[in-house]
Length: 128
Image 1 (cartoon, helix red, strand yellow):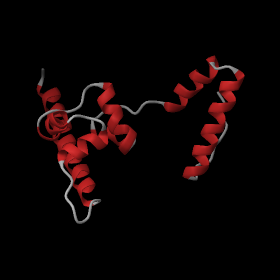
Image 2 (image 1 turned 180 degrees about the vertical axis):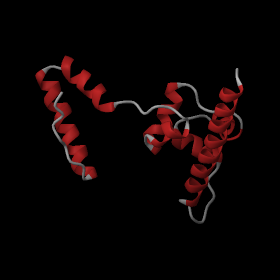
Image 3 (image 1 turned 60 degrees about the horizontal axis):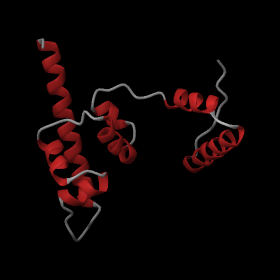
Image 4 (image 1 turned 135 degrees about the horizontal axis):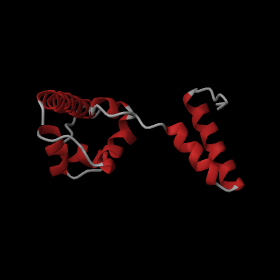
């Protein structure tokens, strides 16, 4: 591995450890009057306590399944922290809609509209 790659990996590790420990401190802060443990934080994210401890102190998540558990809670910021490109969710949805039945398409579109309304987002037509 060359020096540039080593440096980049080290930066990602440092950024990740700072970020995940900050998330834990915020999680603990939400429980005013009672401290939450790393075990509870791990459970909240969907991991085991040993895995969470390892991620907070030594390693960086590399498995897609583990990364998705963090993304589910913290959003696409996780990709930024890990130095990864954010997935193109719109393209993914378009691909799913291409193979969906009319009933499935209607259900997916209703759900997207509900989510957009919930988050105050505007839906625009995407022309290719």
